[in-house]
Length: 78
Image 1 (cartoon, rainbow, N blue to C red):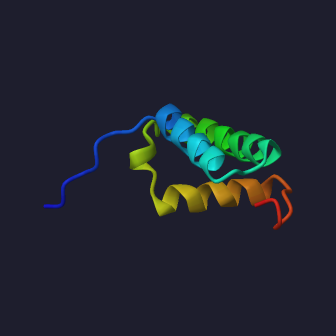
Image 2: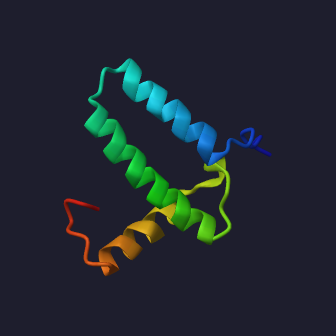
């Protein structure tokens, strides 16, 4: 049986990602935009009782993309 990764909350994962963006000298506008998008994803996942970043699956992300597409987001925005 494969070992599961240690649980990582969305907050910790988001902070690590923001730190990564800073370490790569990404613009503050990029960081703000990505953070906003990820906060929206986080709210969606939490509404489906998914609270740990380490439990997100491809299927969860595909379902989220479908939701965005039904909300009239353009393909470029999705």
